[in-house]
Image (tube, rainbow, N blue to C red; front, top):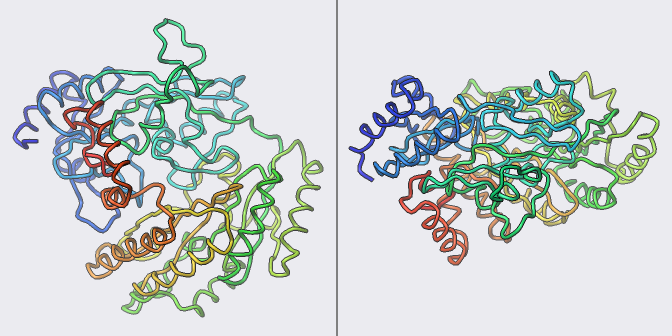
Length: 507
């Protein structure tokens, strides 16, 4: 696509939407190009701030006319995934969240909300409180200013029973790459009233919602999101285990408890450095030896300081009152303590300790950004997130963590991982934290990411979300038939390749 078309395109957008909907200033472009990944920043030629679905449609049609690629974002808080930066230089950022930030509907009776891309977790939490709503959302432990809709579209996860955010999307409004507007599910009927749009996923014909997640076929401008009724009483539980190799037993202990439905939330098994990096800086961050990963002895000292083990297991029980939850809590204690290795930490003991606040807040429906302090672990604030998980098999998950721990050490970096466990699958969240201002450490972080992903892939385990820098790398690891199918859908819905070419490896 010819770069010389970009300036005339932006001029046309300014005429169509008004100058206030466009920014070409150097400071703003620089801010939108910054990220935490091991690659150069990518300042876009301009940023567009549409105010409505019709504005988005107008931008897409102009982009088709001028053959200028767009990179739509919601709030742009995908730290460790790509932040607000586009896939490639020359892509104009379409920042939906600046002006499209309305909570369109809150339905307490049917437990759903309808939001635009700019509604953040903080905004949603405040709006529910303002209305005195009975609903409770599932926040992430990440940025409270992140987009509720954007996180779900990228298959992000959170806390509580509704932790799989994409699974709780219902009914989207989408501007396709060819400029058409569609509504998925029962929003797609040719009628004035669409009362079932956000309450049933499985309308007539194919369920199209899935093709707009982690793709570049269209721009989602609003969607329904299912929530839950806030329970009267919430009680957290924590168990710590002392050794790295305890993960096998932990996973095998979690599986029957989740399968039996004892715990409504996901159960999270988090390793020591992932948990405490939000409270500390690398003990040697200001000297040359900080380039080496922490020794086992240094890790042990930090665990002792914070009163945790090599792994910390956490989850929450919901019910009408404390008395009603006691039988389930007794069952959990008996189950985990039977190993002889676990130490129980009660809700009351955990509540005053900052290291547990992210888990307590997120499982209570409160956005909690405290985990983000881990970006200060090393100087330079470089961060790469990866999310390969595994079936809930203790031996497999433990073999993976052992191999990945060795890889991280080989590259002089810390192994930081948290496994978010359902009844069948452990969603892995891995953080590679490095000094982005140090060229050697940045190169090692890049190689570390690829090496860890190869460890998973060699065992038939693939990533979930992927940072923008590595999306083409992962797409090439898929079977050619699925790659070809993705490309065919792209040609059908976005024939000129206008929307985020290259996103998730789809061109």
